Structure formats: structure tokens, C-alpha cells
Amino acid sequence: MAARGAIQLNENYSLAHLYLVHVLSNTARHDEALTTIQQALVLDPLSLIVAQMRGQFLYHAGRDSEAIEQCNAALGMESRLWVGQICVVKVYEKQGMYSEAPVACDHAMEFSGGNSEALSLAGYVHAISGDSPSGRQHS
View: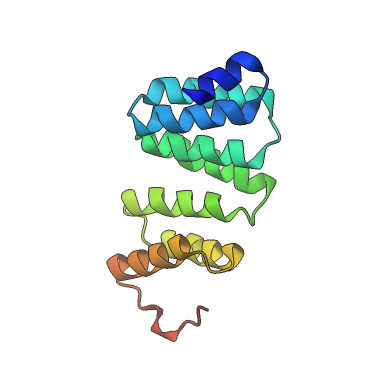
């Protein structure tokens, strides 16, 4: 696999670790994925995307409370990190936290500039929560 080859060439390249994490997580090798993403964070502790992706991979591993904690840590570094807001929405929805999810959806839509995932997730969360966004303006 190319990511492992890249890591062999330069073990300090955090993005190669991030690419490997995607493969590991997508093949349900969550423990390996989380070990690898932690290594990427050690290599690049100020990377917003690596910090946020750790939250996403925690979510994929079913470790919801840790995922929220990690996403909030990334959002604490940059509140406009819309991919972090999307991850928070997914965990809130999974946990039935329907009063919190729409707020994070609104932030994800605002900060993403209209990303289709943010828009569709907002529609879904508003529908399942019983919140009617009919009075809201989303562009």
C-alpha cells in the first residue's frame, strides 16, 4: 500500500499516517487506525485536520464520547472548522442529542460555504429532531 511506502520513506510525514488511517478505518481496523492517527498527532500536534480526523476515526470506532471530546478540542483551535462541526453533528445524532445537533449543523453549513454534506445532514437532523427549518434561510 502506498501510504506504508510513504511512511517507510519518511516516517515523520504526518499526512502519510493520515492516509494510512483512512485505509485502516475503512477496513474496520479501528485499533490500528487510532494508534496511527495518534502517531500523526505526535508528529504534527498543531494540525487542525489531523486533530479533527482523529475525532472522526473515534466516531467510526464507536467511541462517541471520545469523538466529541476530540472534535471539540479541534474546534477549540479553530471554531470555523466545518468538518469538525459535521463530525459533532453525526455523534449528536447517533446519541439522540437532537437539541445540540441542529446548532452544529447550522455552523457546519455557515462555515463550509454550502457544502452538500453539511446541507444534507442539516436537513436530516432537522427532520428527525422534529425541528422545522421552514423559517430559516439557508443558501
